[in-house]
Image 1: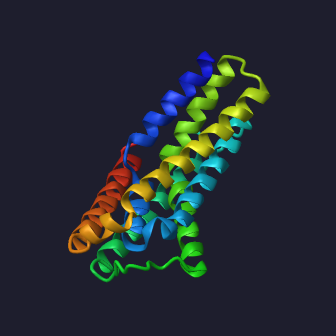
Image 2: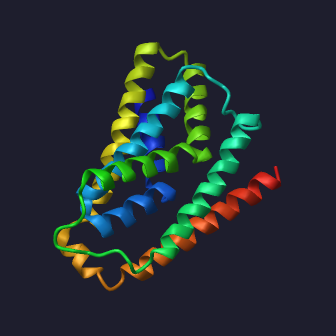
Length: 205
């Protein structure tokens, strides 16, 4: 129980820290409602599941300093910059209709964007590898690690869906109708700043 509380607590604090995934879910929710953003939420959860399986399975290819980790960092920089540019480019073109777009094409697009956003976030890799190292040092059983991994995937999905539900409600979306272009520009700028900061960190390593 003590190990579970440690893992769950650390994971929840990590979820509270806004990152690229948060901005993606928030923007999708405002533009398309919570149903439209659910694809992005599931994509993010699936990417986290990949990291958890890799880290808890003992794979070390994404450890800090490795070539694979450097590739992920550079790809993450490029994708964050691209995502920020998309937000800036399309700011003001999203329509907050009473019946938001929840079609399969948009949902699949959100799923892909959510997965790529999370899988190219090197902080996710470092976080789960760190947790796996802690659990390994405590000689945690395979069954317990499987349960912890499943819990974290569900926690990521639940948190992102909660964000989508809170931001994507019809009343809130209509209230933010005029502010959406500004919010999209701010989100785009923030993503670009994150990409530049990440690149600077890679260069100075």
